[in-house]
Image (tube, rainbow, N blue to C red; front, side, top):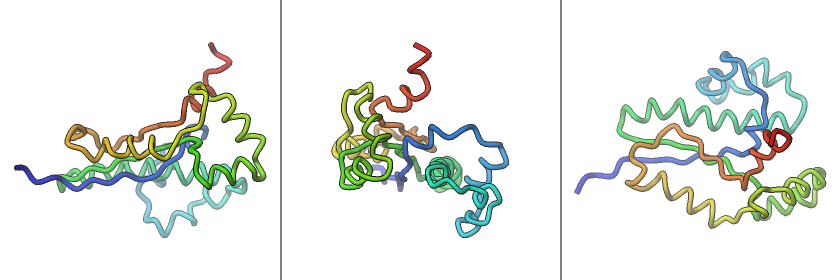
Length: 158
């Protein structure tokens, strides 16, 4: 029996898909700068909006998984990212009743899937990149958001 290779799944967010395109310089910095230097990057320091800061953080997670896939691959290991939308957890309940509740409630009510996700659905997806069936999958970001990103970008176009 072949030895199983090491694998990792990191946490992104569907919110990273609402971020405007970044420059190649910013992409490379988010993907490869030493973690302790990230807060000192000029475009990070210039960010005053908390939502944009969150989006940059989650974009950084997905980019770092992509960059690390190259390094991990040299050792026979794989790393991927999962970017989830509104999942019914205590955090989602806080968001649905917090400062941005109108935004979150509207997004939830308009999801093409017709509902928010469940922790079990995220667990089911997280299992896939850890199985032998996904041996060719590394450096990927799995978007699981009930269609929120599709609606954000394409609702007016169709």
